[in-house]
Image (tube, rainbow, N blue to C red):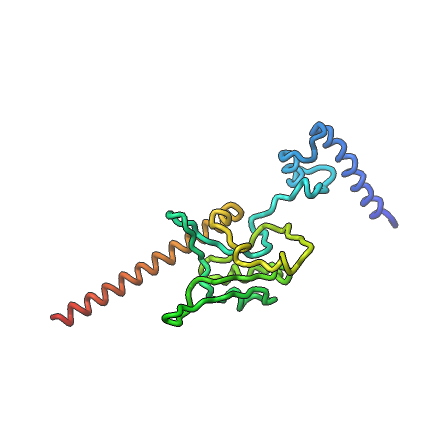
Length: 215
C-alpha cells in the first residue's frame, strides 16, 4: 500500500522519542554525563535517543581507531629516553600524500648516517590517516594516535607537527592500544632473540675456523 513505508518510519521515530523519556525516568534524570548510563547508550541495550552531548560526552574509541601518527620512545632505567626511530625514511617513502619529512644527521668523522632523527615533521592537515607509515615501520617506532581534537586557528603554526609534538613514551602507546602494544613487544623480543642467536652462531663459526687454522 502506498505510504506504508513512511508510516513505519515515523513509527520507529515515535518509538525512540517515547523511549527517551522512559529511559530518563529509569535513570532518574542522570541519563547524560553519567559513565554507567553512557556505557549503556553505546551498547545494544540502548533505548531512546542516541545523540552524544559532545564535548561533555565523548564516544569510547575502539583500540583500532587511528588518527595522526606519533613517534615512540623507550624510557630507560637511568631516566633517559631512547627513540625507536632510526630515520630510515621508510615511512616517508610509503606515505601516499607525502606529508612526512625527516631531518637526518651524518657523523662528521665517518660521514655515515646517525640512526637518530635530528627532527621529524608531519603535516597533519595533509595526513590521510591511512596508517601505512605505522604498518611499514620495521622498528615499531611510529604508530597511530587516538587524539582527534586538533582544530586550530593557525594551520602553519600548529598543524605541522615536529618531533617534540610527535614524541610519546611507550607507556602511552600501551595505554591506548594494549593489544597492539603486547604484539609489538613480542615482535621486538623475537627479533632480538633471532639477532642474538645469529650473532652466537657467527661467533661459533669464527671460533671453529680459528681452531682449524691453529691445528
